[in-house]
Every structure is written in C-alpha cells, then in structure tokens.
Image: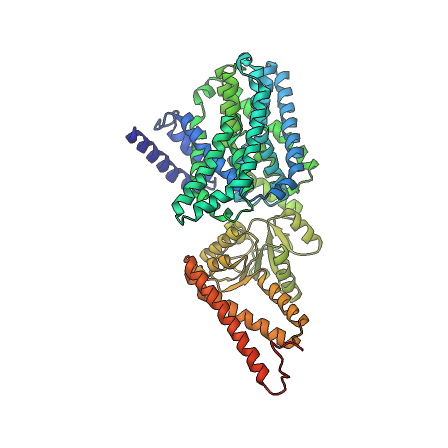
Amino acid sequence: MTSNWLTHSLVFLGAAVIAVPLARALGLGAIIGYLGAGIAIGPFGLRLVDDPDTTLHFAEFGVVLMLFLVGLELEPRRLWALRRPIFGAGSAQLLACAAALGGAAVLAGVPWRWAVVAALGLALSSTAVSLQVMGERNLLPTRSGQSGFAILLFQDVAAIPILALLPLLGRKGEASGNPWADAAEALGVVVAIVLVGRLLLRHGLRWVAASRTPEVFTAASLGLVVGIAALMQAVGLSMALGAFLGGVLLAESEYKRALETDVEPFKGLLLGLFFMAVGMSIDFAALRQHPWIVAALLLGFMALKALVLALLARRLDLPAVERPVWVLLLAQGGEFAFVVFQQATQAGVFRDEVGSVLTGAVALSMLLTPLLLVALDRWIAPRLAAAKGAAAPAPEHPLDEPQDAPVILCGYGRYGQIVGRLLYASGHKVTILEHDADQVAVMRRFGFRVFYGDATRLDLLRTAGAEQARVIVVAVDDVDQSLEIVDLAQAHFPQAQLVVRARNVQHHYALRERGVVHIERETFESALASGRSVLALMGHEPHRAWQLAMRFRRFNHAIVERTWPHRQDTRKLVALAKQGSQQLEELFAQERADRAQRPGSGGWDNGARP
C-alpha cells in the first residue's frame, strides 16, 4: 500500500513537472498542462494511475481551499453589497441557460427527465477554471469579474435544490427520505457555521496562535477548512460553499493574512491535482462509442450557453472588451456537473452510459476552454481592442517608438492619476496601462492616453515600449501584482528606473529586498501634511510646523531603513520601532527645551503660542 501511494505520488508530481512548463512554453497555460498530464497518465493513456474517481474526490479539496481564500478577501459587508448580483445575475444565468438547454433537448426527442437533469448540470460553470483564469488576468476587481464571481457563487448555492430534485425525478425517489427535512437540516448547518464562526473562530485561533508554533497554526488552518467542508458534505451541500462562508467569517479577523499564507501552497498543489484528475476521468471508451453525439453535445451546449450569456452580458452592461472572456469562462461545464450526473445515475434518472457521455462532454469543455482563450487572445481580442480603442494603442501613438514612451505608468487609479497628471502637465508623454476597462473608458473621454491591459503580462509591457522606457512607475493597488511587475521589469528591462508605490511598510521591505530605491508609501505624505495642518491649528507657526513634519519624515525613513534587515524577526522589529519612537520624542523634547532658553523665545513650550 505504501509503495503504491509513493509510486502514484511520484507519477503525479513527475507528470506535472514535465507537462506544465511545456504547456506554458507553448503559450497554452498551466491548466492545459495539468489536464494533458492527467490524460497522459490516466486509464486511457499510459495507465500509470487507474483510479481517477478517488483522485478526483480528494483533489476537489483544491477547489474548496480556493473558495476559502476568496472568502477571506470578501468581508461580510462586501458580500452583502453583492447580494443583488448573486441572486439577480446568478439566478438569471442558471435559469436562462437551463431553460435553453432543456428546451433544445426536448425538441431533439430526449425524455423530459433526462432533459431537466442534463440542462441543470450543463448550466453550471467551472469555479476552478474560471476563478483561476480571472485571477491570472486580474479580472476579479473589475465589473465582469465581480458579476462572474457572483454567478459562480449562486451556482454553489443552487447545489441544494438541484441535489434535492434528483431523487424525486429518479426511479429511487420513494426511498430517498423527506426532502423538506433534508433541506431544514442543511439550513441548520449553515446557520450553525455562521453563528459558531462569529462567536468562537477568532478565540480558537487566538488560543492556537498563543502557542507560537507555526506548524500548529498551519494544521489549525487546514483543520478549520476540512471541518467546515466535512460538515457541509454530511448534509449534502457544496463543500466549496461551506469553505467560502468560513473565509467570509474570518475576512475581518487579525489572522486573515496568516491564514492566506498557510493555505495558499496547499491550494495550488491540490488545484493542479484536481485538473489532472479531470483529465484522467474523461471516459474515452464512451466517447469512442458515440463520437458524434459527444461532439454535438459539447458544441451545442457551449454554443447555447454562450448565446444566452452574451445576451445577459449586454443586459448587465459589462464592458465590451471584457465580454468575450466572461462569456467563454461561464459557457464551459463545471466540476459540480460530475456530482450531479453521478447522483442522477445512482437515483435512476438515466443509465450509466448517458452519465458517462454527459460527464465526458463536461470534461472536454473544461479542456477546450483554455485553448479557446489562447485563440481569443491571439486573434480575436486584438481586433476587438483595436475597434474599441481600449486595449490596443491608437495608430497615431505607436507604442514601439522609444521617444513616444519615455515613461510607463502601471495603474491609473486614485494614486496613479496624480502621478500621470503631473507628468502630463510638465510636458512628458506617458503610456498608461490600466486593467479596469471602465476606468480606461472614463479616462479616455478626458483625453488621457490610457490603454487596457494587465501590466503583469510581459508581452504587454514589451508592446507598451518597456524596452526603451527610461522610467516605469508601478502604481497598482495589489501588493502581489506590484512585486510581480517589479520582478518582470528588473529581469527584462534593466535600463528603466523603477518608481514604486508601497501600500505599507511590509510592501516597502519587499521592494527594498529587490533593490528598489524610489519607493513612496501611498498614505505617508498625505498623513504628514495632515499632521502639519494640525500643528498649525494648535498654535505652531507654519514654518515651524513644516520643519517638524520634515524632521519627522527624515527620521521615519531612517527608522524604516534601519528595521528592514530585521523584518523577519518580530521581537527585534518591535524593539527597534519602540527605540526609534523614544529617540524621536527625546529629540523633539530637547528641541523644545533649547527653543525655550533662546532669547526672544518668550518661554514658549513646544513652539506653540501661549
């Protein structure tokens, strides 16, 4: 048993190490690599692993961890603000797609029970693929990303009625128990998770953190997610939905970042294993028996869903440049369809052969979607961008001329706008990259030369003229993306000076680690100006208030430089910070004493008017 487990582990790891870099080198993305690796080692490939179902059930935990991390980024008030997109756009997508697919199936002569279950299963979309792609493309903060996430979340909620419906439609419905009692039990578990989470989770994590044992906190983090997922599965609900609720409940806690750090590596590994298991689970024997049926089913359900989603995207008024990716991601089948079709087969709704064909079509759609995204990026998106004037440079401003792009500004939100407007007013040409299509459209109306795109993409930076740029300004809001852009610029555009916005001191430390010199903390200067105003209002002369603020500024920068080599040692960091604060207070106190003793000072204490 141990030997078999070790062999399978080696096979999975080896296949991933070979297939994923190869797929990325070909420009196909990591998901295609994982799916291809699964097909290669599965029962219809080299047969190195012959139990894809067990692997798939285990690897689904990767999706669970992903939803937990998404929940950590979504505080309860933000989730409440999304209630209309979740139940509005979510219900519209699911019902419209299910109605279109079910109607088409009935017209094709499919029995109505089969049509209902197949339509509901095929109407669902892949949370794993969609969120992975939206995260890679930085689409989650955009309007299309938010609506897509709301729809995916509603689909997890819809798991309750869909699974409750299956026994009623099957031949074994009489022995399935009371669906109302099952629904009440499920609702009770959800309420219990919310109440316990609000009352006990923080106290429990605080107790574990007090042990000062990192590996125990990691175990507690994973145990928390596993426990919630097991509870949800016990009452027939989506494990991912339970993990998402747990994440939301901890989104405002002081342990949010620690939980993210501990869970993130496991999520990445298990998601890769999940995609490999999907590739392994494709039943090529059933596909070979009915190739034309599978092909027609695959193309038919994706085309119908794409048509419904395109109409819904217009109704939701999503930015035109973001619609193709949004439609394509939601048009594919989803991992929850595997559960629906498996349960439908067990309940006697349809035969095993029908379930295999439907499951194969869904798996093929998940395999096909990343390939279609590559085609979309290479051939369709550039034409749309050129037509809309958002994602591609205008002909009168070619981005590949060195003199036309001496400065590249990544991010044009509230911070980047100030930098950009100052440079424009000073007569400097700036190429601005912004990932929010709405922001791009607004800024273009004001006459600013803003282009749609994700600055973490190397090809986009090259197109923007980064190889000739003298300065690259990194003003994006997200810390991880900021560091990724810095790494790309240092590796590929060493001639460009970097000027980087830092969200906080930890971000500043990470930038100093990379050798960045020109760093500005985003709120430091404005807070310093506010403090100077308070000093003036308290009676200090304006020039004296300015002197104190500038002295504090220099001292603070010196403290940050002094502490950053010890950023990993919390005890040393706190000690140095306290020492610095004490030195600053003593310095200012000595200055006040000196001023009080000077002739003509009037004995003013602390520089304020009596």
